[in-house]
Amino acid sequence: MTAVSQGLGALQRDILETLDEAKGAVFHYRGSAREENYGRLDNYRWDEPGWVRCRGCVVKLAPGAYDLRASMKYLAMKRGATYCRGSFVRERFQVAFSRAVKGLIRRGALEPLGLVPLAEAENEPDEYTVMLLADGLYLAAWPRQVRFVHKR
Picture 1 (tube, one colour):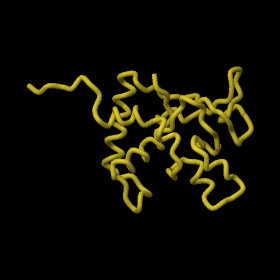
Picture 2 (cartoon, helix red, strand yellow):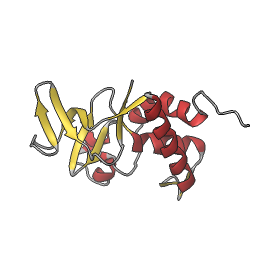
Picture 3 (cartoon, rainbow, N blue to C red):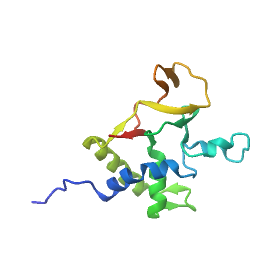
Picture 4 (tube, rainbow, N blue to C red):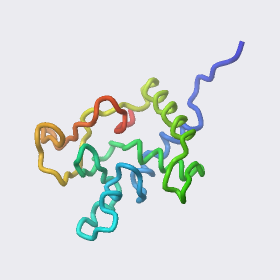
């Protein structure tokens, strides 16, 4: 009979410990606003940390909201799990990261966000993507994909 670990794995601990670092880092990843802004000078503020692209919108995440794509790319770069000069994340790492996130959600350490709190939005509020509610701006994220989370 094999013993099953009851604690968090190394990758799960790293994910939780580096969410803020990854959000504050300035680098390109699929879904970052920097990727949208590449080579343009008129939207320099998109180069600031926290700006993301989602559903055709460019928005800045509020404190406490995290983009798991940034976290995955950040950890992959730290662990040497990228290729093509850091442009892409190795598939094995993507799979491990996805499993680790699912475990963190199951344990209640992370909570997926369907409505993502925003600090700013380049797009005007509407009823489908960027919404202005009583307590602030929100982005309606894709329901079938866990991309945005907050720590519990």
